Image 1: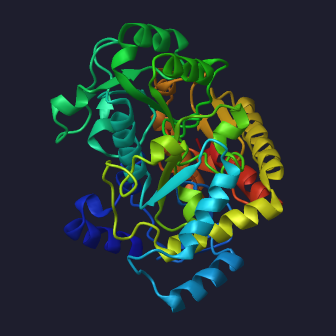
Image 2: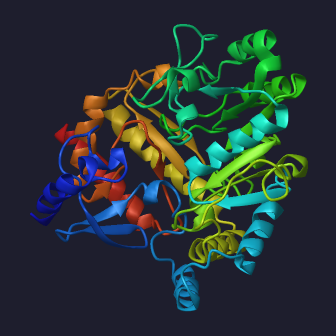
Image 3: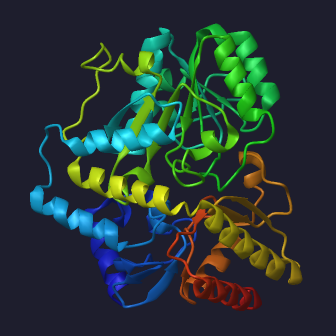
Length: 424
C-alpha cells in the first residue's frame, strides 16, 4: 500500500510523519491517506481511493477543489512571478474587497497564517492599551503562539498554565482563561481585573472544539465589558470569515470587534492570514507606527490572487443561503439515522459548518464537548472512510460543505452513514 509506505518514510524525516498534528490520525488511529489530487467535492489518495471531502482543507475551499476560475487566475499569476517581496496592486485589491465586507475593518495587514495574524493582533492590542494581560476561552484555538497555548488554571480567575512544553510559565501567566459561553465569568473577571486587560480574543463561533455556537448575550457581554474597561475585543474569524456569511460571524451577530483575524478563505486555498480593525489601532503598525511586524511572503501574489478571485465569486454568486440549507438537510438526515439506531448525539450547525458530537448533552463549551464518546467517533470515522466519505479525523473539529458538493454527494453521504451505523 503506497499510503503506508509513504507514511513510514515520512516518519523518518518529519516529526510524526506530518506537518500538522491532527493529520497523523492520532485521535482516530490508523494510517492517514496521502492525498494526490482533488477536484470539486472529491479528493484522491496515493492508492487511488476516492473520497467525498468533508473538511475541505479545514475550511478554506468553500468553492471546492480546483474551481476553474480560481485555477485560471492562479495560472496567469504564476506566469507573472511567484514572489516579489515588494508591494503589488493585488494586495490593495484584496484589502479593499475585505474592508467592503467587514464594517469593523478600516485597515488591514496581510500575513501568512492564522497564528501569525493572532500573534500580531495581540501585540498591537497590548501596545494600544499599554496593558499586558489577555483573555481567551477554553476550547477556542487561536494558533500555536505561546500566549495562546494556555489552559485554565484551578479556578476561572487564576493565571493560565502552559498547555505545551516550551511555553514559559511567565508567558502563560499573562493569559486569563474562561469557559466559553459563560457570561457570569466574563463579568466577574472584568469587574476584578478589567483595568489590567489589554484584550479578549474569541472565536465568535467556535470551530476547534467542534462547532459550538455563542449563546444569547455572550458576545454582547464581551463587547460591553471590553468597552467599559478600555480593553480591545478581537474576533478570531480565521474559520468563520467569508464562511458563515460574507461579513463573517460579526455580520451575522451584528457586533463590531476592535480587531479581526482572518485566514483560510481569504487565500482561496493558499497560505494566508490577516488582521485588521479600527484605523487608529492599525496605524500603530510599522511603518505607520511603532509596533513592529514584517514578513517576506506577506501579501504573496499567488495567495492574493486566489483569495481575490474566491471572494469575488462569493460576492457574485452569494451561495450562503443555499449552502446553509444543504447543510441543514444533511444534518437532519444524519440525526434521523442516529436516532433510529438509538445512538446518543448532538449536532451543532452554523451555516455550512457542523459537528456530530456523540453525546446526549447539549454542547455549549469545552466541558460538554468532552462528554463525547471519542471511541465511537473513531469507529464511525473509519466506517465512513472505507465507504469513501472523509470526515475530519477528530471528534473535536468542524465538518465543512462547499458549493461543489452536489445533491448526489449528499445522498451518497447519507447512504454511507446508514451503512456505517449498521456496522457499528
